[in-house]
Amino acid sequence: MSDQVPVQTFVVGIDRGAVLQRRAVVSKVQRRGAWATLVIGALGIVLALYALFAFQGSGMWPFCLLLIAAMAPLVVSTLLALKLDQERQRWFAANELPPVAMRMSAKALELACEGAAYPVILPWTAVKGFKQVKIFGQFVLELQLQPGIGATTAGVRGLDQPAVRTVVKPSPLLKPTGLYLVKALDQPVHVIDQALKHFSGGTASVTS
Image 1: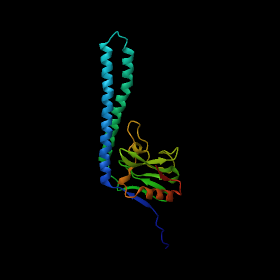
Image 2: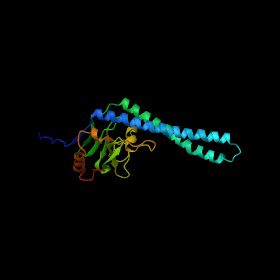
Image 3: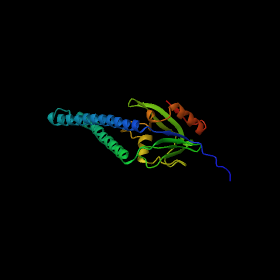
């Protein structure tokens, strides 16, 4: 019997405490901003309605209607943003934080996403790598896919999960949060970059 050659993999773990702290900060900042926007929008509508009825016959009604038309979408979009945040918190409550953030092999990049039922699997042909950006005062890694890659692309698995879509292709109503908090990973960014280049054959990397 011939010996089996072990599959070479690179695993990046997660610091649970850092992630939980990050969740609280992101939710607090997003909700505070959403409520502030909602108050501004509602106040604009109230003032426009007051002027519309208080100054009848003054010719101000077109401006009042324009103000209402401008503020109404702002109020609606803010309510939707708050709803999306509530859904994200329900995902967090219903799903355990995965112990592993990502796993790389010669075949694919496997990503664990908070709130997702199963990992995202991406063949290297679908991956550009990660972009390191600063959001809410902390560095995070955002997943970068090749143009045209989607949930139905051959070899791709897991991109259609709602929890994945919120971080890979976030709603314009919510500020992007990034896929991974850098300080919550047990490997430094430059080591992750080297591993990406190694397993992808040089086609994927970490950029900033």
